[in-house]
Length: 89
Image 1 (cartoon, rainbow, N blue to C red):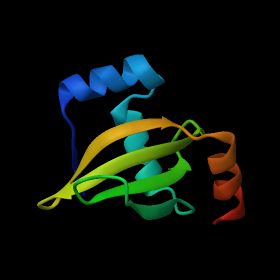
Image 2: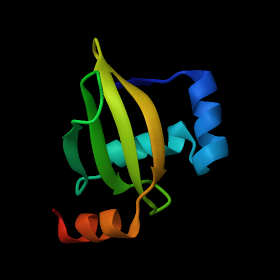
Image 3: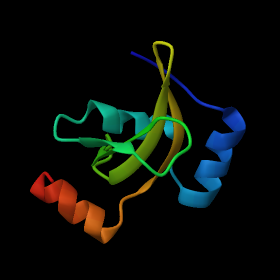
């Protein structure tokens, strides 16, 4: 699988959320990750809730472009999202 992102957006994400997209993409490899369609976006986007390679529970928003996943944003999960992940909901 191939991943891509906008460099400026990635820098803004680090400043705002403290999460590098290169770390966030490991959430997509989490066997226990929960993925759902993001119905709040104008374009078709996906939200995945899972653990990164540091063990942090993150929310990663992305879209598919051709055969690539384009990371849009990543942030630490809220307490409610962490509970949902823990329950597998």
